Amino acid sequence: MNDLIQNGTLWEATQETLYMVGLSTLFTVLGGIPLGVVLALSDRGGFATRLLGRLLGTIVNIGRSLPFIILMIAIIPFTRAVVGTSIGPEAAVVPLAVGAIPFFARLVEAAVRGVDPGLVEAATAMGARTHHVVLKVLLPEALPGLIRGLTVTVVALVGYSAMAGVIGGGGLGDLAVRYGYQRFETDVMIVTVVLLIILVHLIQMLGDATAKRLDRR
Amino acid sequence: MIEIRQLRKVYPARGGGREVVAVDGVDLDVGAGEIYGVLGRSGAGKSTLIRCVNLLERPTSGSVVVDGQNMTALNARQLRAARRRIGMVFQHFNLLSSRTVAGNVALPLEIAGVPRRERIRRVGELLELVGLSEKGRAYPAQLSGGQRQRVAIARALAGRPRVLLSDEATSALDSQTTAEILDLLRDLSRQLGLTILLITHELEVVKRICDSAAVMAAGKILESGRVADLLARPDSALARAAFPLDGTGREGSHVVDVVVRGAQADQPLVATLARRFDLDVNILSASVRTIGGQTVGRLRLELPGRGTANTTAALAYLAENGLIVGDGPTTDVSQVLADDQPVPEEAGRVESRVAPTGPEVDG
Ligand SMILES: Nc1ncnc2c1ncn2[C@@H]1O[C@H](COP(=O)(O)OP(=O)(O)OP(=O)(O)O)[C@@H](O)[C@H]1O
Ligand SMILES: [Mg+2]
Image (cartoon, rainbow over all chains, first blue to last red; front, side, top):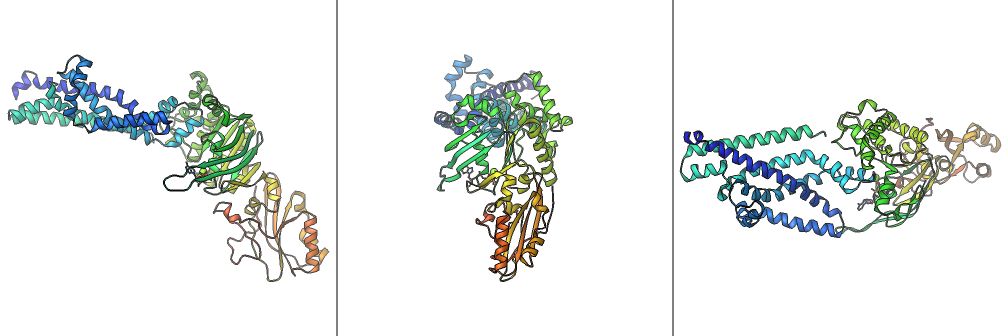
C-alpha cells in the first residue's frame, strides 16, 4: 500500500480518473446539449423534424441500453479512428463520452421540456426565431436543471471510468480492481474506494451549490 | 386597427374526443387608439380568439388584419416582423425567471437586434413608464404580482407596438392591483395612442377601461359595440350584468325594466308616471353607475294592474321615450357571463333570487 503511494501509482490513478472524467464531461456537454434540445423540440416541428427526432431518439435509446463495457469494446474501431489508438486514458475518453451523451441528452430533454411553455409563447409573440428561443429562453431557463442533470452524468462517468481499465485507461477504479479484487490487497481497495467516494461527494456538492445559486425562481 | 372577419378555429379531435370549435365565425373591429374588451366565461374561446390575432394560433379560416396587414398571408419572416409590432401580456406574466427585470424588458429588443447601448437606454425609459425604475436589477421572483405585470407591460411595449393584446392580464391579481394595472393600461393607451384588445371574464375590467366591448360565448360574439351604447340596449347581456336588478313584484302587477342615460337620469321619471297615469309605481330595484363619464341607470319598476288601461298607457309612454329595456332577457345571460357575476333573470318568472342590489354609484 505504502509502495503505491510512494511510487506515485495512487496519485497517477487519481489523475487518470480526473482526466478521463473531465475530458469526457466536456464532450458530453458539447454533444448532449444540442442532442437534448433537438429531442425536446422535434415533436413541435414539421414532418422532417419529427422524423429526425424519432431517428435520434431511437439511436439514443440504443446507446443507453448497451452495457458500457460492451459499448466500449464495440466502438474500438471508432476510437482508433478518432484518437489514433485504442488503449490508454485518451482512448477511454471516447467510449465514455459516447456512452454519456445519450444519457445526458435525455436529462437535457427533460429539463428543456420542463420550461414553462408560456415563456416560449411570449418569445414567439415577440417575433423570436427558433435560435432566439433556444439560446435566450429555453437554455437559460433550464440551466438549474441542466446543472443537476450534468451532476448526475458526471457521477455516472466516474463509475464508468472504473471499467476503462479494460482498455488500459487506468484510473482509481482500475486500481481497485487490479490490486483489491484480483490481488486481494484489501487496503488498496479501501483507499481507492474512499477516494472515489470523496470525488463523487465533491462533484455532487459542487453541482447542488451551482444549481441552487443559478435558480432564481 | 384590428379587423377580424369570419374567424374560425377548430381544434381537431384528439384521443377519442370530438373536435372543438373554439372560435366560430367571429367578426370584430377594433378602432385605432381604442380599448376593446372581449368578455366571456371560461371556455368561451376568448384566449383562442386573441391568440389568432398574432397567429400564436393559426386560424382554420377567416382573416385577421392588423394595422393594414393581413396576418394570415404573411410568410415566416414577415410574420416575425409583424409580431414585433404587436405587444402581448399574459395572465401569468410569462417573465423569464433567469433574467432580471431589465433583462426581461430587453429581451424583445435583443430579438429585434437593437444595439446594446440603445437597448439600455430604452429599457430605462420603459421601466420609468411603468413606474419600476428602481427595480431593474431585481429578479421577477422578488416582485409582487402587480409589479410583475408592470414588467410584462414594459416588455410588451419595448418595440413601440401600435397594438397591445392582453390575455386576462389582471385575472391573477387582487382587485386593488387590478385597478392599478387597468389604470396604467388606460394611461398608456392615451399617452402612446396604443390600441388595446383585451380579453377578460371580469365585468369590472370592461366597466373600468373599455371604450368598446364584445360578449362572447361558445365561440361566438353575442353582442358588440361601444360600451355606453351596449348598456342602453334592451337586449344587452352586458347591461344586465352591469346593472343587476332584483325583485319579482306582486301577483297581477306588471314588472318592467327601464334604462335611463345622461340627462334622462335627472328627470323625475317615477313621479311623472304617477302623475300622468295615476299609477302607484313601485321601484323594485335600481342600479346607477357612471360608465365612460356617462351616468347610466337601470330600474325595475312595478306597475299595478297588468293589462289595465293606465298601465298600458304608461308602458307606451316609456317605450315612446326610449326608456323601456324590456320585461325579460331574450337570452340566458347566466350562460354568457362569468359565474361570479350576479345575473338577474326575467322578472315574474323566477322564484328565488340572489344578492339583492340596491342603488349604487361608482366611478
Ligand atoms: N390547444 C388546444 N387543443 C384543443 N382544444 C383547445 C385548445 N385550446 C383551447 N381549446 C378548447 O377551445 C375552447 C376555448 O378555449 P379558450 O382557451 O379559448 O377559452 P377561454 O375563453 O380563453 O377560457 P378561459 O377563460 O378559461 O381562459 C375550450 O373548449 C378549450 O378546451
Ligand atoms: Mg383564456
